[in-house]
Length: 246
Image: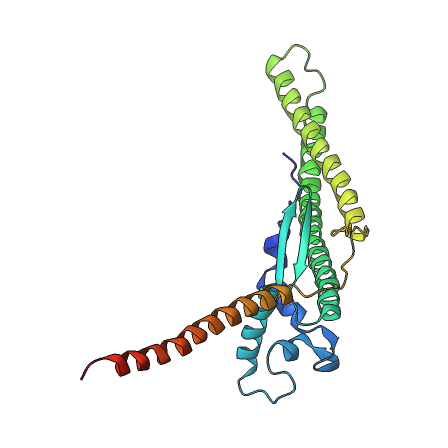
């Protein structure tokens, strides 16, 4: 029931906005060398681009999103990055977390600034309404010194006093909210809390070397068996032909 924003991290981290921001980051790789942009690493590499920038960015965005997998693990999220090099995968994860935190920080700052601007505008309007209500109550009291025996005048005074009280409460609340919003604007908050920092993997996830060796052994054994049977079948056929009467 909280009125605060509830971040949907998997959707944000795999958004096109975050992917475009990641394409501008630079990384060191064994294949392409130091400090190459992610756009270059994922698209044209060390070759000259053969397509336009818009196409490169579109392909790069798809590549970035395809590298990311985020799964919920209880109250936390598990971020997995698939990349051709282990150090590159770790650096990519670190940069992605930084971009996510920066994106949420900018979003919150923009929303807070909008809220502050709205409150400031409402304070100006409410202050004007309050001044008008106070002036109306003062004029009423100046014109009506003795109202004890007039129910109508007493009722009118109550109405004017209630209007002043309500506007005073609204004005006070807006002032308090303005101070709270100003504090939120300058407060340095961690929007992404990292429980375990990204680590470079010790072994590749795919292709599975052991599985490939086992499959290759089974395939080789199968092919060898088939070839052996085919070689044994030929002399039998020839012998059968020799024994057949003419």
